Image (cartoon, rainbow, N blue to C red; front, side, top):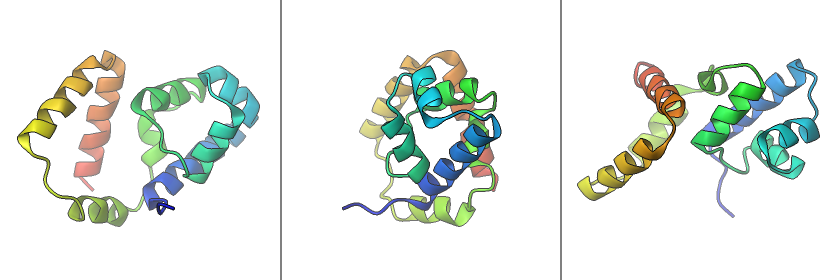
Length: 121
C-alpha cells in the first residue's frame, strides 16, 4: 500500500476544517462537486489526491481560494518530494504543457498562483 504524502494529509485537514467552518456535511459537499461522500472522506484523510479541476470546484463551493488548501503546509514536505524525483525530461514537459493548456483559464491562474507561492517558501 502506498504511503500517504504529508501534503495530501495537510490538504485533507484544510478541506475538513473549511467544510466544518461552513457547517456543510460530507454528503452536502460531495453533492455540490459531483462525487460520493466516501470520496470526500478519502480526500479529507489524504488517501486520494485532488485533481486541479476538483480543487477549483471545492474552492468555489467553500468560498475560498485553491491556495487555502496549501496554507501552512510544511515546505520541507514539498522540498523532499521534489528532491526525491528525477528531473522532468522534455517529452514530459510537452505533455504537462498540453494538459495545462486544456484546463479552463481560472484553473490555470490558480495553478500559477500556487506554483508561485510554493516556489517562494
